[in-house]
Image (cartoon, rainbow, N blue to C red; front, side, top):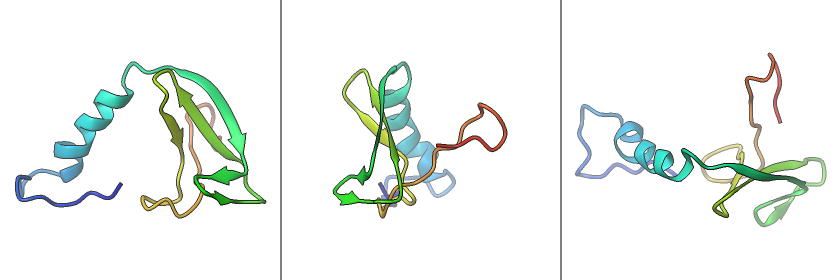
Length: 87
């Protein structure tokens, strides 16, 4: 999703902090990952050379890393498991 400026947003505040962060917190905090899947498909497009990681949550949501906010292809999920570790 793209952050869209709305008239109700304060000039002094970051749109992410004011609008998207509370939505993300409500939807993700406390959720559990119940399944992982790797597919060659990212939404509706196939990528022969890439395995796309999908995180399945206990409420039915599926999280997938994207290369950009427009969903133009699969992306990388970096972790703190060890330096340089990513999926």
